[in-house]
Amino acid sequence: MTKPQRADAQRNRDKLLTVAVAAFSDLGVDVPLETIAAQAGVGVGTLYRHFPNRNALIEAAYRHEVERLCEAAPELLATHEPAEALREWMERFAQYAATKRGMGDALRSAIASDSPLFGHTRSQIVAALRVLLDAGTAEGSLRDDADPEDVMRAMGAVWNVASGLEWQDQVRRLLGLLVDGLRYRARKG
Image (cartoon, rainbow, N blue to C red; front, side, top):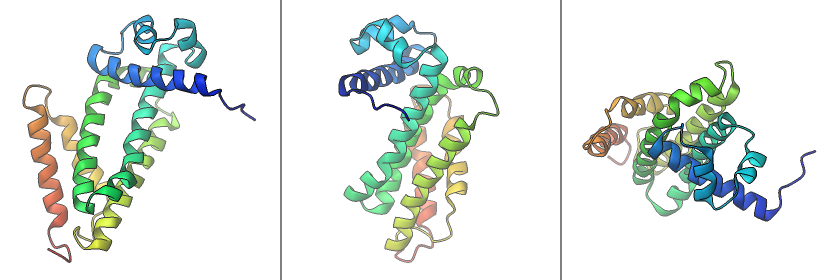
């Protein structure tokens, strides 16, 4: 049985993950771990108590981003119409993709190809998409034949948009086309 973390230890871990995601995105995965610890306001010993090595921190940062992304689906549905919630979630996915793009090489070397990490996180993303699509189908704003696996593959186009000044605009246009396609032949539309 795993002993629960003290509240201050959990706060430190959360700060480290937040800072690590930003640092890996902005500076690359070779950023010194001491820099991450300093920006999180903790000592490097605290970092190593939570994450014994760079690979453990990279994997935890990746998991953290996927969890945040997936937890956003029901939250968005609580405040937006389903099609708009889907669009907003897809934009968050694009930001996630940009973050992961910065960590991609390190993830590949940190995690064995037979690691269940990618399968598990893929399942989480597909489940979040299913929640969004089902809400839109039930409400009548999204077509009822949309499969979350297919939508995820179509969203893969954001991975192919070259980084640069127009990256965000291109991604928004692609996601807009995708959402419009999901509205085509919907019961309401």
